[in-house]
Length: 571
Image 1: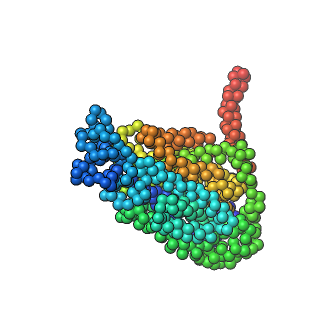
Image 2: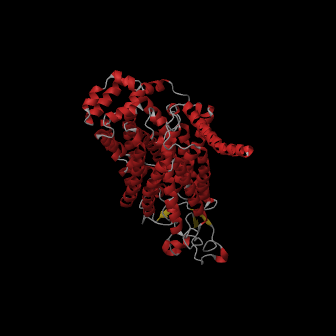
Image 3: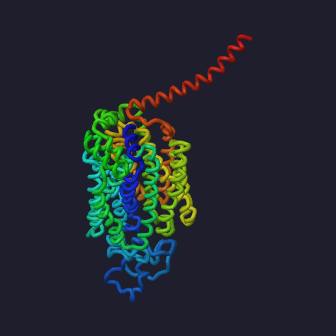
């Protein structure tokens, strides 16, 4: 808390904090665009087989003579006749017009370019037997997010947040631009994986740098601001994708701004918390005095000295030297429970979230409209979540958001697909609940783990949410548990392939997981208005304190019974 007192003396949320927060948060506006970009760059337009090169459509009876029809009377997407047919549709209850044999589309496909002039699907024919490659591209992007969180989170603890941010901005700009000019699908996947890596580093270190320069009482507001910026980014993606439907142009448009972010990021001030936790008190003093000057607190800055910092930051310096082992997560019963429960929550939230937002074409309405609606629902959902978190507590907000989201998705799985309005409404409600769950778990996880454990888990995993608590080594806050959030986002696109078995199977899976996770929340303690733990012992004391409180309540209830018994005996 001593560092927080220093920030308050130097202006609290002053001019420096306002400017740097704005500049650091701005790139997060495009983070949503990259995370769900493949909804538009990998959209699947209606398509059918291309007739053989030797065919003569005028003599064969037109294109329809080569195309079987499904039961809805639409041309089959993945089959064609081996020879032109002129028979009526569905003879004897079959699913083709004519009795001729069919074959795969060996000469490629013809696509409907009215909505999507060009996507990676139409350019590299990722349909029919190659359809799984489309989901593979998104999963590889999420693999990059996981690797980037691990690598750049580790580097940020060693090199500092500012240096890693500068590198991430440049890598995102270069890899995103290269993806727009990728000559083939493997090269596209490689550049998307690199983009996922750098964007994970940006998400992590942007929030870290912001929170570490903000007073503790503003942490919930910073987290909410970040959530709203991400939601506004979804609006931006819908508008830009509608205006720029060509996938290469769209990919380029959301990547080029990172060159500008790279340029102005050189003016960021490195986190003084990181300096102090690294033992660089001279750089800590210089950074704090510079912030004091920007905030108009020159006198307070002049009063700072090495002796004052050593006295004020004694606790932080001591903790930096005595970090706990990551194995404490499995050795200590209290931490083991936290780790397992939070891992389940992270996996369920991310798994169901990306299951919904990466299947916009499955709702039967305009993909641009559903993108706008999905972005709009976040605004009231996150506000309601913010109010519940700060008034009723973290646990009820987390439990309700996951349970309601799972129920909405499960109900959607049994509603006929022709009822697009009902299905879309349930999906929007479920998506809003999952967005609320993300907002809640951002804060909840940071408040549950002790500082010494948060500081020593950087090698395992990081996400955007590892940074809500303003402590040294911020991005190590969620550690191994948050790794499963990335695993959930990797597995989620692959689960959609089970639709080949039955169309509603993915929805049943996406819905069952958050419902099961909502039950796990009951095993976690409430952190509203509770002191934040710094050590493993603090977590143990919190659990023992809860037990002692329950025992005292039971004793209070027993006292009236004992008194009444004594009165009866006396009578």
